[in-house]
Figure (cartoon, rainbow, N blue to C red):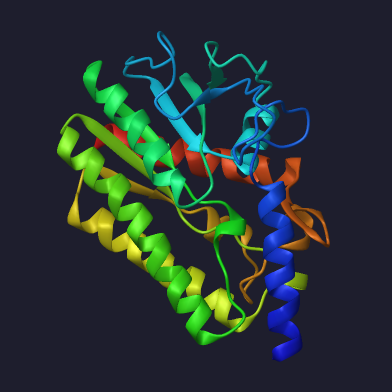
Length: 251
């Protein structure tokens, strides 16, 4: 287990660097970058927060950027991607712990403009295993982040949340503590949704992408050592997202 823990710690560090910005073809960088950020950061600039009933403000980093690329987005933050009649606006998040602040900024800006729908998720690099203590501390941190996001939306009163659950890692970087961490996090999100019926819906990324052992299915990985998603994964997630948006809309 010591060898596995060391490998996972190194992998998470390296993958965290790759999860900071929106995937290949991107200019956006969420972890410092080079100052030339091409997408809206945090609460965004003037005119970038649409309040249309069919507008969805998507908060994430590299995996979300890859999803937008899959939809044919042109990388202009003022010009949303089109998805089954919805206008999807990309908001680049900072890495934890700053991710909570940038997500709250989007929520508060949207609330000030009349409210709407916000999608929020953590990146695969935001989950850790290695041993019981490390996984437990990581779970507590991630729960605190999501609570802050939920509290902001509840306080706003006119913002609805779509929460993406844990993104699995490729088998090379997966251990029992990571899997347990992610599954407990997913159960925590379900509890939040149950506590706020009609206001929060969980998007089951994990159930779509994870193998029975808890790692990312090989057919959905960029490669055996890269937990970013390929186009087959995004095709599998599209109908799940459409269903979740419909549930939130009808709720």
